[in-house]
Image (tube, rainbow, N blue to C red; front, side, top):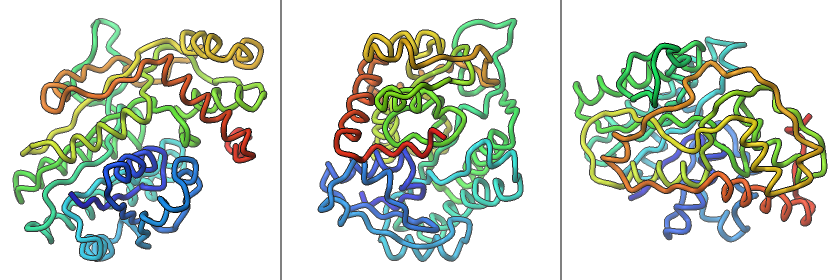
Length: 324
């Protein structure tokens, strides 16, 4: 398997790169600019030399196809995308990157059918709107999708287009719908706040999580490994799957953080606003197709993240610019 990744300098992409290098593979990243500040948190200099940068705009179909040729990719992992705040502020730019960029990934797969075996892409739990107050229990991934943001709507569009590429061109694909991914490297987006709270405690700084309510917290290492499983395991078709982690209230998250790092008792506070995405999603179809899936407990995920931040602080490498 030879993977061409977009969004490889983001949080999930950096952890995927870490796992690919552990497997003895080199990493190829297509991006508009080389920005390794998240990769540098996980890789040493010799490992960084095995990460190959291909400069280009993911929304340009010719550039994407050229990147597939240069990397000799057999699999495309498409993680590039603009987050909720950017899509809200500039929907046209959001659509260009999130929708046109995904179409470019699939067009590259069509142009190299004999070479590219599968496209795996990042969808999002944002394809779901709020929970139905009259229903109970986890929400399946085949329910009617009703996003409340441009970002979520763009992800729905990508899932539908992926199905058309399977029906028209026979391109197999998997879309995964992460919720609140947390861990070292998560420094942007609405749901980055739990990670920022952990970082703030490691730095001895106060932090207020602006929302509350239920959330599905998913450790980034687990999500990266799940993306790799959907790339490598046998599969034919076009499906989009919910991903499930630890469904807890923000109050419970803060309580566990306080157990792991007692200083959080005086440093971390939170609001009570529920984010408008169904918090409890059923991942049974994903588990049936690709399981068993990696699962890190919330306590161990918070502990590992906190200890990594403390180590970075001791090394003088803890970047606090995302905390404001």
